[in-house]
Image 1 (tube, rainbow, N blue to C red):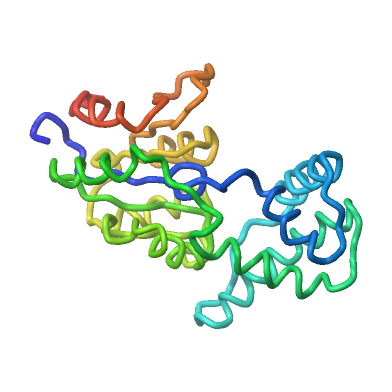
Image 2: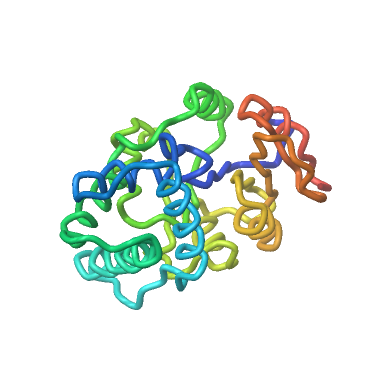
Length: 243
């Protein structure tokens, strides 16, 4: 670690540290079949497209409340609107409220998420090298349970989420909050994530070193990118004081 000025390595959560098993559409449809929705490739594709549209059109998950119970209610309502919008497009069915309860709870635990086998060894390696580890995520408070059930939470020194900070990536506010948790300056941190806009651009605009997890190896402009976690230690070691 003496070769690098980096003190903290931050990670995005969903899409970086862990991924949905299959797809969001798979999970939605798996639970919807209990309510009479017929499983078919056409319905699966329709749900996938409707989810992308509904998610992209949703307002940022920023809520003007701080009490834990009220915050959880706001998070739940935010997701209710998205899932409702999905099936408004695809086809509504009886028992939707109960269906939503099932889906919301399903994504709030570890059973529908999977972790790259290379991740935990990497995190332990980074801890062994003396780096502090943190998470900066636009996820909601269910993230803490997910991290617990995936056995990831003990590896991190801080967890910063948008609904608690009242800011979402790529806004600088959420990155500054995370930096303050470690009492460091922006140039002393790296943020790793799978979104060019939210993670790489957000981090670099806030003064951090951004690293894009680009598993498909696509050309992504000037972004510093890695295709696998195993490449990260070399990236960290190569960051100089003048970078």
